Length: 128
Image 1 (spheres, rainbow, N blue to C red):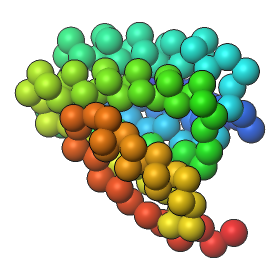
Image 2 (cartoon, rainbow, N blue to C red):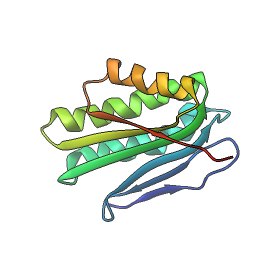
Image 3 (spheres, one colour):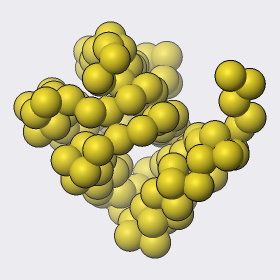
Image 4 (cartoon, helix red, strand yellow):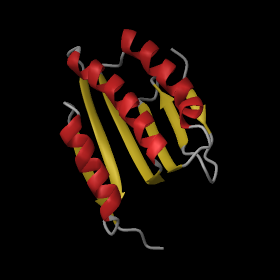
């Protein structure tokens, strides 16, 4: 299966989906003009990945901020990850957030409540 890579911009996150290296990451800000259009390739990729997933899938999300339309897309993406988990695969989601950012921590906790998926909350200290 081919990798998917999308460069980070001021409005969109970096996306790395590399099954050979076992790297699955979304990092940055997510405020695209059209979230559905931006995330569509990732959603299609996840559908294909579900057919032949790795033995273990660790999906890492390190978002500084995301808007409401991105939130809907993230739920859709994580639901696809949840299906892989429900298929019996070893899946974990790491939700990284700045320890001083209550909104991002709460978003991760909300996803934990919504999804039946192992979610590990990982705070970090932003030295900026």
